Length: 314
Image 1 (cartoon, rainbow, N blue to C red):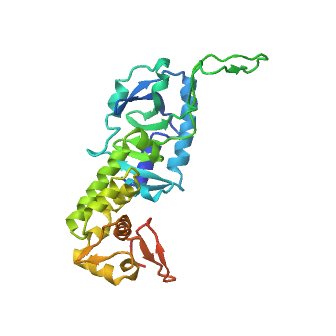
Image 2: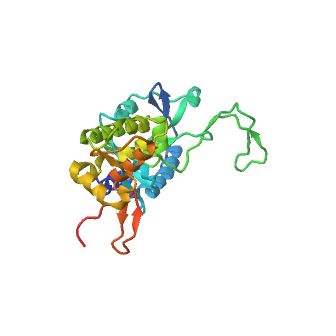
Image 3: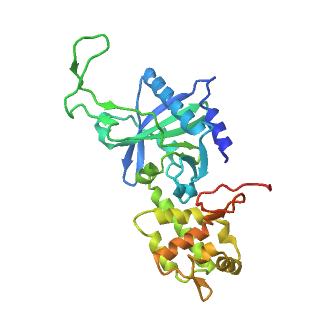
């Protein structure tokens, strides 16, 4: 599904000419998954929340300035909306519809368990979900400290003895059918086990590289992928679809030897690329991602790991 299709699906529900509905759910951590419980709210609350979040969606998901990119490219760290299609590898929200339909009413005694909020926007049978993460200032219990308030039109302050939930002007991601549109990768990683997806994609890339038989020791790359930091794993995930991996093995090795930029950082011994150190493994990733590009205008070479492929001839 392309960017235009996502925007069309969102606009078909969040339409200025038609009033869509909204339901609010507390998202609670449960073992390695999550549950949702419906927050019963007055119409005024729903209207205010809907107006706030529609503004967020228009600004951060529908604006012409917003770039959409494939989730495999998260190592580029761009301010983009990353697109992830749920499948058997990773599908944290595949049962969200079912959870929402079976949800019970949220009660204050579970306030400390809240990890975020799920919002359901619907227009007839069409719907999208949105997620907002809960941070330290999101939930305030009445018994934590002494708080006072003065109601509008009154002179005296009184004790504020109610639990408080605050909704912010942000949404970490949207869920449209089986697709997740992600603005905040870190939240997906910390709350919904996205690191497992990264590891899985990285391991699949390692298998492709191993089967090409172009490296002397795949174990060094596996060691780097297994580090606690996901930096190397994310880079491996990015090159999973690299055209370099589809090149003929012998042609690739010959080109590495002929191109000074690569021959200076990659050593070939007995017909295979040397990968005995972490430096070797990082150099190999730069080559597999085709990081070095040359300007057709100035002949200047650049290190450009994030690239957009241009279609057609000049």
